[in-house]
Image (cartoon, rainbow, N blue to C red; front, side):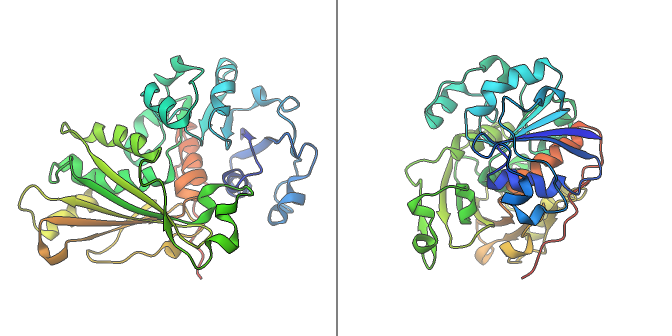
Length: 345
């Protein structure tokens, strides 16, 4: 059994980790931290876990995280970097769901997250945790930077096209929408029900912190300079993400060949469903699952390809992907504990 600690177990990604790991056959939940909820039974805060999780939350100073095999950080940015070194020195593997170890470019991190990186030397060994694109490095890793939710959809949507060199890397557009849970579990005016229901808005148009993360990873797929225009939107639903990606073709290629690029790239991937050409995937087709669905379009058989990508922002976009990385790191079958069928309706 893998002894598991979760730092920050009260937020949406934290409880999603608990939901997944509660039925994971090789997971032993050992410590779940929360300063504010110290001593409160997990099942009291989240009745959905009654009979599944018997632990209580404990303050970080009481939790023996060094006794774990792996610790997940489901915390705000900056927390993992403050604790990772001690854990790693004690032989504990670390998976951070925040941004502390996602980017190798320290200057970009500090610019977009407004804080100094406190353990820059660890960045060189941190592995970006997108299994479908980085599986071999994840196998050997002891420190994982779990991808952002939006970047997951953009990278998996653009990757086959960039690697094949059939699109203009300098003219990529991503028009993305997320459910309100992507903003986290907090009391904030902009994400109140009365503010988000029956409404739709863009945000971060002038610049969003997921842009440099995504560009850094997309740049590894091509020798051409990548330029990405990314606009996120907030939609009035709890969970789910839909990304519409646009790229300009730079060569004559058939629709069948475009479809084959994706089918070949993801033919062995259990959590990526390449749908028939011209399909329209819906967010509810991935709800509460680790599945990501992709469909291709080519309006008017012209020079542009449109890639539609949907996922659950809390599962494949966060906690499910983190567990997928854990499975790889510990030599387990990648789908272990993650074979949830999407719920519908």
